[in-house]
Image (cartoon, rainbow, N blue to C red):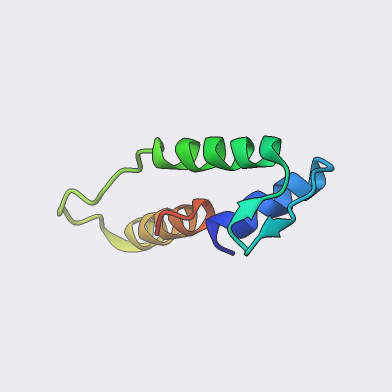
Length: 77
């Protein structure tokens, strides 16, 4: 699920209409504002990057996998 799909799923749960004009601009100006805020909140998230060091064993594999999953979930990967 990409960032816009995540936003629209959330907005629908809040009872908002996510209808768009040409698939880009939301009919509801309030939803457009929410979408802008959603994007800004995601852009402000700073995730740790690899330091280039080696993290041994299963912990290292789990850390990389978890970081990848978080980035996908918030649409920054």
